[in-house]
Length: 360
Ligand SMILES: Nc1ncnc2c1ncn2[C@@H]1O[C@H](COP(=O)(O)OP(=O)(O)O)[C@@H](O)[C@H]1O
Ligand SMILES: [Mg+2]
Image (tube, rainbow, N blue to C red; front, side, top):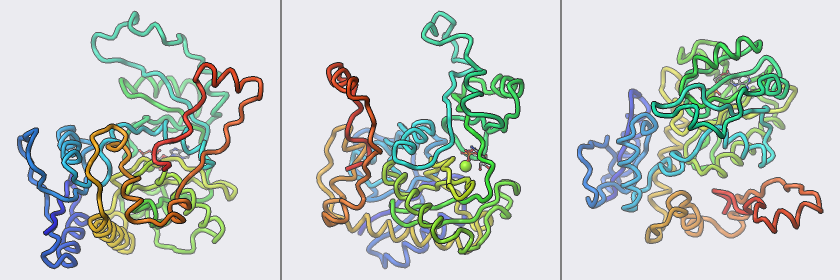
């Protein structure tokens, strides 16, 4: 018998639907339940074959527990090591390299620091910042938002330099990014499951958050060609980032889908919020993924950072043909280095690494 554990926050309908569906389909061979966690012994034997994580980004104890479970060979969706390492600014930069349209974005030094960090500790920081240069680069209006996080927390639209300073002053110890505004004609959120299955959801961010009015069920919302590009971009990003469950948001302007948020490894899937159609779709897709992952042959775990952060290759051999693997491999856009700089770059060993995470 295989055991599936579900780790949740406040959400109800999605985890309940997953557990019910896995238990029905599992017929006693695969059993799903909510995890119960107390003191975690560092040498405890594994209890679960697979865990679906919906909340460890908010609870460090859960995150540490999941990393420990992964060490015992438990499949954790999503990978807790990579999720810990990832941030939105890295994602934007990676997306740009992969040829996905991304609004111009600048990472800003934090406004405040933890106790004990004084101005002497920060001698590497430029002061004052070239605020005008930053604004000139991203343009106005712009979005000020954390480099990590979600749920529209601490996200603000900035119309002037003064507004930027005023919002930045409130950002405290959060590390923020400033991003070019996309004055969008259309907006979509896309579920991506197993780095493959994509559901494009028409979404109106101007409606109140979590109101149930944001998601619109309209399969023809995007013209076919645009929908095809969106699906391709979603797979490109989720494969490169290695998330098995994720949501990618696009603000679409003049037929160009700009990816503005794609670090959502625990996306909203509640019935009241996303509606019955999307709720049923994501439930079905996640349950399919659970059975697929449980059915895959797994190698002995290797206790090395690269196999923990990026365990994909061993799985890919078991499930995908060489052609499929080739099709899933993403080559970054060519980095154009002027010929005279090339020898310099390789001599100083500063040339960008050829292999990026998830590109195997
Ligand atoms: N560059 C942008 N252009 C236009 N709208 C944006 C941009 N960035 C964010 N927004 C708006 O703000 C909302 C929240 O920002 P987002 O980056 O998705 O952060 P969160 O992770 O908190 O959801 C988006 O759904 C969108 O409506
Ligand atoms: Mg978002």
